[in-house]
Image (tube, rainbow, N blue to C red; front, side, top):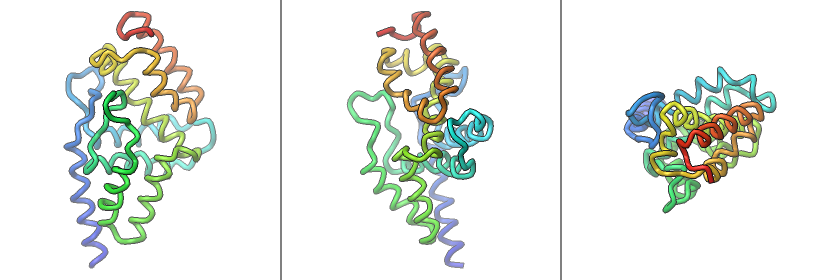
Length: 195
């Protein structure tokens, strides 16, 4: 019973992910996406786009990564990828959040979730590289569907966009080629600054 109660407490806690708003907006929409929607979408993308991974990956592990990677934002908040005042890599702050939130679970599950979260953050394994590819690719698709979306809204120049989304290539050369072409076309149309 104690184990179940810990698991239920964690389940209640992660409901807060639905309230963490992201800067990106839903496809062809003015409504901002929340972290729970983002994580669900990435899990679906993992299943659909698996064949495009650079290497054969453990799909279940990738799905676990994308479903838990942003849970830390319940405490740490969402940092906009193109924020100029705060670096998007805030893993120390997020580690404190990971230990607290995943620590609500029974010890074995807490250790597993923290290990998966750390693996995603490090982006060194083939599963983490593919998960990062999806994490960067989804907002690209959203921005493309919204006439430049956050890129246009925050006047992000092309070189900075490519700098931030370049990790897509680490997990999928094929998706990266598609992404480069689509983003370049967006710049050529004058939707984003071509510098």
